View 1: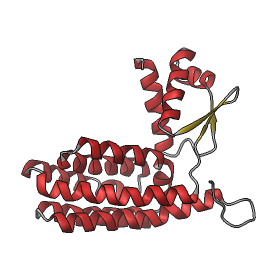
View 2: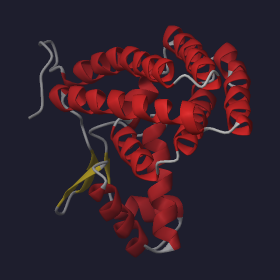
View 3: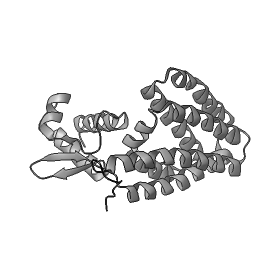
Length: 224
């Protein structure tokens, strides 16, 4: 992939992650090329890469559509993420150095400002740094990539859940429990704390997916 197409891909991923692009929104290579001031070739390459990762669906002669996640698929991804994130926290409790554990605690403490300000974008960024520090401490690149790929598909819904003050505050508190378990070098407690954290956020996430799938005036639907 060219550097220009990589830049476009990352910018689109960020727009999905922060909620600027929603499931069902359409994008095309011409609009991307104009918006990011590149030629249509890297814009096309970026769309192909986004499609390969499952973030968009390519539609001949109609550009691309930000992928919707059905309720059944959402549940499957959440179940997978719970297991993967729990294992990463368990490994981090066993493998993180003292310096890495201290840095994790610092990331957690500093993120409190974004919680108090209810700064959605800042907390999303802080949340990413927090979890990335754990993946790094787990010393398992394959596991980390599996988690990132799963989270990438869930990005919009995750960002939307963090628009709720109660969820952000609880998320921060749950992070604190994870930090304590990892700092204590307790793999079982770290895994349990992380699983609880992902599961609780998953309930909010599932509700958002269901709401977005619901036909106007009708019950929640599903995408098969």
